Image 1 (cartoon, rainbow over the protein chains, first blue to last red):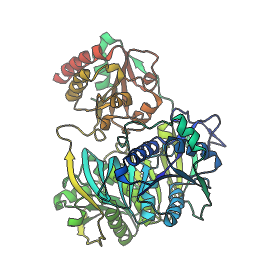
Image 2: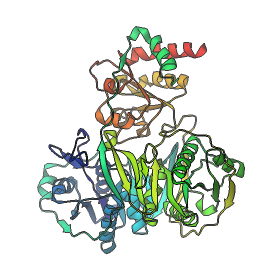
Image 3: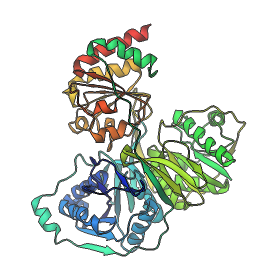
Image 4: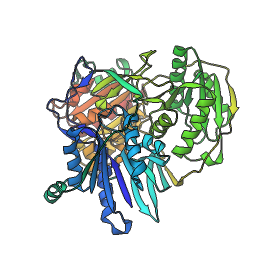
Amino acid sequence: MKILICLSNVPDTTTKAKFVNDNKAFDTTGVQWIINPWDELALTRAIQLKADAANAIENITVVTVGKADAEPTMRKALAIGADSAVRIDAEPKDAYYVAAQIAEYVKSNPFDIILSGIESSDYNGSAVGGMLAEFLNMSSVSAVSALNIEGGKVKITRDIDGGKEQVTAQLPVVAIVQKGIAKEPMIAAMRGIMMARQKPLQIVAPVEVEALTEIVNFELPQPKPACKMIAPENIKELVDLLQNEAKVI
Amino acid sequence: MSVLVFTENWDGKFKKLSFELVSYASKIAEMLNTQTVALSIGNVQEDELKKLSSYGADKIVSVNNEALKNLDNQAYTSVIAQVAEKEGSKVVVISHNNTGKALAPRLSVKLKAGLGAAVTKLPVSVSPFTIYKKAFSGKAFTNVVIKSDVKIVTLAQNSFEVIENAKNASVENFSAQIGEVKTVVEEVQKQTGKLILTDAEIVVSGGRGMKASGNWGAIEELAQVLGAATACSRPVSDEGWRPHDEHTGQTGKIIAPNLYIAAGISGAIQHLAGVSASKCIVAINTDKDAPIFEAADYGIVGDALKVLPELIGAVKEAKAK
């Protein structure tokens, strides 16, 4: 069995958002790049599944659409425990463009399970996993908070508004994962970091795809008015403000 | 031409989210000078379906088929695409809830329609079709042009008001083509007796400042007197003090209630990313320099364990008046 993880290379989650070029582009100066947090959880779950020989997982591959500057993040995924990496050599234009590129690769390199994070922490599109499934005519399950392999199928816990569902899906399947899929992301050990240098990182040429969306510009949120401080002994004043000023209770 | 809005149901009933969506879709239809078609998939009675016409739906299409009893992303996407094609829909509106996040990307590929995800307000313009959404988990916003002929927009929850706009809509039953369903729902576990976090208008949330899982009684009691849902910060769910589905923040739930009360939460940037869209934030924290006070509207510097019982008392007293 083979698992593919779609990896997004994103700014560290503590990064302050700054823009250049008339607010048309994200300012990458001094930014630390990381594996998108949900993708990191997906990778962790894949490694856990592979550790159980009964699951017969022969390979975990990570795929990213990005230029050479995404490679340190891919090496990190290899250090954590992915077996191989594929970089599709293109600037990711939008989710449709990215999913189309990955779909093209998967058409000639099939996988049994494809994992994708439910969101990327940069453009928050929540889109690549579902789009990829549709391009490949594969079934997909989203909001996955647990995933196991049983008898050639996957058993999934899917979060729904106000509850959970236990879902069985045939292979191949795209699982779009969220918090809960793994408790904490796995960290690379020194041995893994050494081994990562020897693992294959293949570079694939992109195909011609037209993006369907285009960013016009970015805006920073309006600064909030200063917080009104209330002394702990005046708690009635807070309730009064919530009732009569904010009108929220 | 039309604007199509997919209205999910919960055991045959719609909820506020559905009416927000129809209100939003019908405003876009007004901008495009066209009509609003609402699509319901599943077993919903006619009187419930007709409720959608109170918020601007000109036409209601109902697809009810045993094979669609549970959500199968591929099958549902195919049904929405068939209706969009039949109705000549140029814009498809879907919620940015779990179901919408599962369907909208698939539909985008099926219809070759650009996707504007998690929008918080009406399009800035319809020609070019420009949407406004958050980026970098709420640290910024962005204007995005959707270039394709058909557009898909997912609306962030609690970001648009319900607008009454009564129409005299007819209900049309549509038989969609349904292919093989490759996922099976074996079991459904519904949360009972508790408000759903992403639906709630008031949320009471606890952080590490609550010190132990045993102290959560105060959070729950305040939530109960306010009719609120309960939430927590990431360290709290990582510690196992509370279930992970209560975690609000960048990697947990993104919420936008009218009132968010943060007790013993310092307000790390990742936490704020999940709650900054709240209309009013109250912060209770011992550290007066905690970043939560920069995001809050009202603040109390104090120990949440001491302040909460006082607050519960004061709310009860005010409510009794």
